[in-house]
Image (cartoon, rainbow, N blue to C red):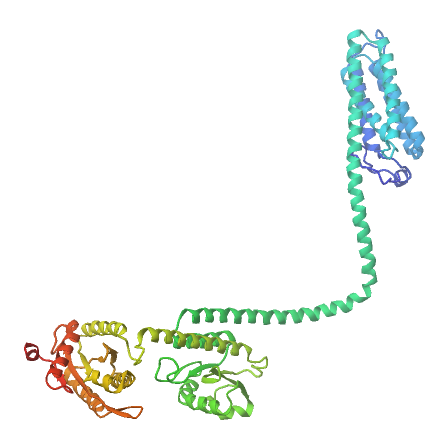
Length: 588
């Protein structure tokens, strides 16, 4: 059959093994299925034959059709159906419809006449219902007007069958027959309505699919247009794939570098210990960039170290040993000559003696700077040619992070200094001095060592203020404080401003005999110092009281009191003296 756009496949009538010419030439909404029809016919034939052989009806006495006659009628139509199909008469739609109409009429009449043989009645009802559905839908394209007309025809046939059945049946049999007819008609119409509803849904789907097919066809036309370009495009794709792999490797390296820098920044933000920051940064660069050498050096006194800070990360032991000796000179040369980042390769490497016989093919030196002031360098080396071809951005970013960390540490120290230092003299204020003193006492007790404390006061300081003014007095206080701070620092101690013109100096790990010469030298320098203020030369002197734990004072917490007593003893006995505490002194 030719398929209409509204054709729907129903399993009961699905074409199987139908000759292609028979199927292609017919155009209906229901497909003729010869195998299904033959099975239905054969079922009815066999049932009628079985009923006959079982002698369920009496042929001679029963005026109505018996099982044998039904068997013959069904067999005849079965044979006709096969012959018409074989000779291709079903190619004509009208012949097919007429034949189906005639079959429905005959089998309805047979059903009306036949006695109440339940098995035959059921099989015939099924056969008639199938033919009714096929007749209603065949070649209608699901047009409602055509189907409605055929429904009227079917109703007329069923009415005629009912009228015929009235003559051959009792009242009870007639009621059963009519109910059977109504059930058959209802079943056929219900199935037809279901098929129509399914078809409508499928039409909607088909419409959507047709739009998609149209889009696909348009896309196919464009693909055909670009077919000649596919080969060249594939070549470009292969090239791009290689480039993408390279780019992915670069992105992985960038991600690795970013992650490393983030960790370093996080660490630097969590501490003010620049020595640790330098160590972590060098480790990160060596691990991330796979360098053969990463060294960082900072000047002495840049942070809290009196010596230069430096760290060297390398697998070459000989390089590390030689670089430790040369790094200060390399920094000095770099600072005076260049002061900008520089990469050294080939013959330029000969200037670096620390390389020796190590396999190093490129060296980069980057300055550490705060504003315009340079305070250190970073040295990075590799054994790979072209190692720095992509520039020094990563290393410069790392240096920038270190510069920020150093600046933040200095700000922190400055703030800490402001909190710990006396505003006039710059030495420890009384509060911070007492913290240092308590810590020194605990450490001395733990080590069972010695601790010497001296309290000294400027003699006749009030007369200095009265004679020369308070600004001159401030200059005297600063001079005396600076001398004391220097002697304390040189001997591992610390000093603090205890009062207006009173100062305390603490010398850990020093007995009174070890502390005495230090304080005598300090006293001598103070006496010989002339403070110049405007046009005046001011001579100053101090009175010093010295005590020591544990030889003199057995209670370390009483050291300041004992030093105070010793100092006042000196003031009462002529001023300008250095008095060493003892037990006899306290008794006086």
